[in-house]
Amino acid sequence: MSHATANDVKIRALQEGDLSEVKRIDALHTKEPKPKYWSRVFTQFVGEGAGTDRVALAVDGEQGLLGYLFGEVRAFEFGSAPCGWIFSVGVDPTDARAGIATALLEEAKRRFAAAGVTRVRTMVRRNDVPVLSFFRANRFVGGAFAQLELDLEEES
Image (cartoon, rainbow, N blue to C red; front, side, top):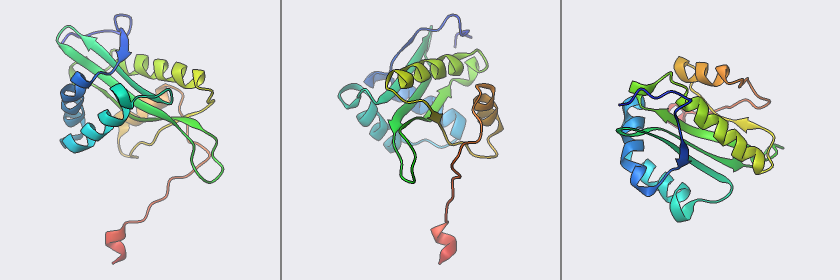
């Protein structure tokens, strides 16, 4: 890959042809291929599925896709006002720490603000230190809501 820097990046909308590269980058990070998941996301967020409340961004390098970000404006129950929600950001590990994810996040924030929301949220595994560090370095802090879950398999 190209070892891009944040100053070099040109952000564009993700396109249907980017699907295989998004799957590849995600699998490098998660160690778990998710072809059905990404096909569904692309149907909802790219091309005809895209809407003004959805963000699907890409950064290219000399050899192909370097990074991507997906988000949308969501309104949740329990009194939460509509907010921007980042649900996936990924950068090819070869180009990590070059500011690509931050550039994608800045563009997503700009688009969320243009959509009229004043907050951006995400959810990160507590033990995913690199991703936690990325969001904290970009001024994300614990929010007003606590995520709770119940393991149905343990309930049985």
